[in-house]
Image 1 (cartoon, rainbow, N blue to C red):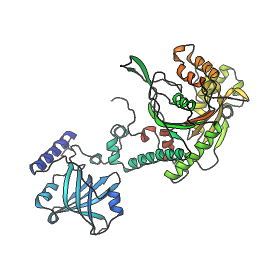
Image 2 (cartoon, one colour):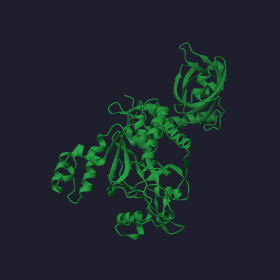
Image 3 (spheres, helix red, strand yellow):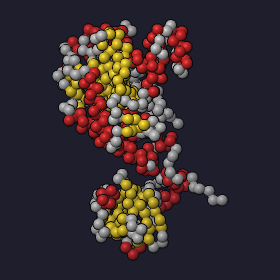
Image 4 (cartoon, rainbow, N blue to C red):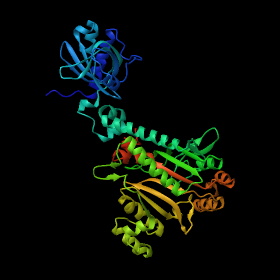
Amino acid sequence: MEHAPAPNEYREQRLANLRALQEKGIEPFGGAFERTGNLAAIRAGFAAGAAARAAGRLVALRDMGKSVFGHLQDASGKFQVYFKKDALPEAAFAAVKHLDLGDHVGVEGELFTTRTGEPTIKVTAWTMLSKALLPLPEKWHGLHDVEIRYRQRYLDLIANPDVCRLFERRTAIVREIRAFLQGRGFQEVETPMMQPLAGGAAARPFETHYQALNATMYLRIAPELYLKRLLVGGLDKVYELNRNFRNEGLDRSHNPEFTMLEIYEAYGDLRTMKRLVEEMIRRVTQTVIGTLCVGTASQPVDLESPWREAAYDDLVREAAGADWFDLAPAAARERARGLGVEGDPAWSPLELTHEVYEKVVEKSLVNPTFVTRLPADLVPLAKRCADDPSKVDVFELVIAGKEIAPAYSELNDPIEQRRRFEAQAGGEGGKVDEDFLAAMDHGMPPAGGMGIGIDRLVMILTGSEAIRDVIFFPQMKAK
């Protein structure tokens, strides 16, 4: 029984075709090729008998002796091409026999419709643009191996048109977010991604060394403290849409490098952000997806109905019992164990409660829910609630069991901010951002602030199961 060639054998076959082209005077790796338009544009403007110039990757070839049919593919779609012996110079037609699937070619010719009704270019001249030395995934009947799809995204994009459409939607979502914010007077800004102190969130940072200054630096975990400096400087409405980096785990909803949108509005508060995010997500979803029913078949998400608002403590009581906050530590751990949450005996009541919230409550919130009035010790950068200083005036917007957008009525009291920073640093003065506190001492206006995890939002709006599905090049463990 004849065995299938190994990948290196495929490469040798293609190198032989490359050499054959060179012997015919054809350069295997060409240059620019002027096109009538992309393949979708040529299809949209189709007129029988019209001239066309097209380029793309060959993804199908059918050699019928005196004619060869093929399909070109570019980012916009596919289009059939037809090489006919009596329509091409003899040498040009002979060279077609040395084309391989995956090669990039440019063609020019006349548009016509085949007997089966397919728009086609009858090729009168063609140009070699790039010889592919390895076969396309279709050689193995499609690309389904998830590991290869993530590690070699370029093969995923070639083999799976749905993946191309998903990333086109991601691009459109980001574009519409920018348009929405610009339409409401927000200014897009850029702040440092390499910082002397990693602040604005509680997370383990990536550490690096700045050789010229002989200084330890950190990739940012959040842009918050720099954006607030801009509020001090007089910018009323600012946002940044860029990368954050957190030196933590990999799972279905976490990647160490992720895209975050942070928004601040001077003289606003939590309620300002609530109105903004609800309108923005609905507007963007309707524009890009075309419906407000999103999510997956097993977990549909309704963005159209009124969005729920519920206090953190009330949601915990719903899940863990009305008497949860009255339980002794041992009884609380036993109750948590019954909910599938293993609590460390060294944990404080707050730590155990928040574990129950993250593992049980949050995962149960499918339709949009604003979780409000979180414990103050969890959020060191927000104002306390006027009626209960143990709570802070914040919300966490949860959709499909994932935190999508935390928002605060921002703390603008520099004295209180210093106290919280010092408590968070555990008495290590070197971890307190004195430069930020100096900025606050110059007067920061009251403000509403919000962060939105773009990758998670795209997951929900496109019905994707994992964060790696919506990031072109997700972080992977070394082989």
